[in-house]
Image (cartoon, rainbow, N blue to C red; front, side, top):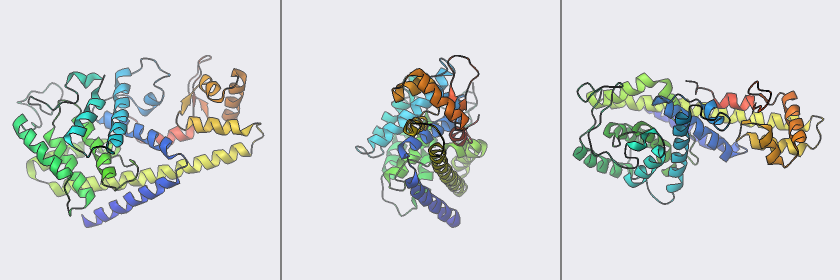
Length: 347
């Protein structure tokens, strides 16, 4: 446990440090949040991929409900981060985040933003209370448990922070205080708590991908704590996740920084004219890695032929490529960048 905790803290510190080298931190964090949203939603059965989300305005109606759930996750996390300036992590804040999470999507009929007033249960699709895998506490016990959890979240403790948030996440999932969205909200709680407690300057540690890749073990260990008291096994699993995700995030940040430097050098060394326009396009497609010529035309305030010429040159430089085979309404893709972002998010 001590060795894992030490490694986890080292990698968390490295992640906090390496994020400072990002040339466009807000853009990367925005894309990384989308990656987290996809992984967290896929755990709950959502079928949309990161590609679907990045192309959501290019494919009208395609997996629309699934995509909107992912977009809501992004909005909910950003809302929570903003609200931390005004509110501590509390049931009031979690209820507001829950409303953002389910607003306008399939779970909105399940009292978004409100604690449950009835018994719920966890198990396979179609199971009953009698056949459920896990039955959370009854409403009166739930309210008492939430009060205790809220105090614990905001209490001073000699317990190492990463162990404390591992226990907070477990306890929230065990209380299961909402009719829907408990898994997603419980995973949102992790980066919010780390940020509030100054363990990360920027919300860059997202464990949903690790939980998704180890889904059976994740659910199994939560159950083992509930029924067997195996806290240490759960905490060790959680710490391994922190190490794995922080390592991968550091690698991705370094890869993206190298890509940006390489492309800047490639454009500057090419024979294209008006290089500043090409750099402006690149700044745009880091946050819009799937795009079309109309977007470039509007962004640069240039004619259609000029935007098409810039796109053609970027294709010839092997920076972008066509994302579809249409003669009209052609969509383009920032290949290398998307490849990094999509790592591990495939369904």
